[in-house]
Image (cartoon, rainbow, N blue to C red):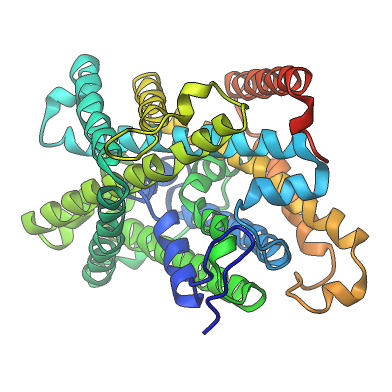
Length: 439
């Protein structure tokens, strides 16, 4: 067993099973509990095509992650890969886009998904004031738990793993007995524009497996573990998603689009009865709790580290005298999630989150091409390579650009302003702290 200590002082203990489990856990969140109806509303029974497109795209992207992750085995993940290929500026942009543009917006989106589902039982959550109070209680509680200590935060994250899989598997098995083939028949192929718009939102549910590679410094035998573990993880996730959509569409037919707030809750009632509603709702609540808590556990450490390097305000590096946690970083991180939660609904936040991570993915796939071209064959032959030369990375780039082209004008403006602001911040930091920039 390879448990060698890395130069970072970390122990390599994560094997194939552990990496695959992390990939599945990081990917399957609250989105899958509401997305089947959103996809069906635009594409009907042909919505499965959007799932296949997203599945193929994420598979190609993950293959690129596997290639570069098998070569760059230190802790950091996507932003580190981009920085190695394109320099510190690109790495800085990718870093912020990952934790803010993706992670925080993702948490805000699934917090809204949670409120939408619970509004079935508590209609008061459709009121914006009570909705904001609800977000404050949920996020405030998770911030408090994580300030109290890492063990408490990790405990909640671990709880979510089985809680999110068990109800989904129960729904798949139970629902398979109620599928009507006529509900799965296509009346024709969807329009390219509609397909692109839905795929952009749907891609939100496929994001997360790449985050497992942020633990690169703790993975055993990365050249073998990374490609196998990450393929098993994303393969299992894609299978579950496609089965969920097939069962939802097969059982509910045209009615699926009517339940945008909680389609799986309605599916559970139709296939299992009142007990099914309880199972799916509890599973979703715990799943979203675990997902957000996991981000509140890990995300603030990025702010903490950046503050230690004088890249962010120094108060974010303060450690609680009793609990030994970066409490200010945790408070700020949770506060940003709260502000975004009350500023937009699930679809808008999910779209911006997908766009942000797609830009990061674009950088990683491009990094694979650049590093492949400048690496000698002897180095490449000793680790995993995406097959068929550069065909897959190029197809992935074209597909990513196609998805991004489906952004609405207000979403394009939001992303552009965000990138412009980050650039200004970065170059101000260079002027003030030039020694931090090392290409």
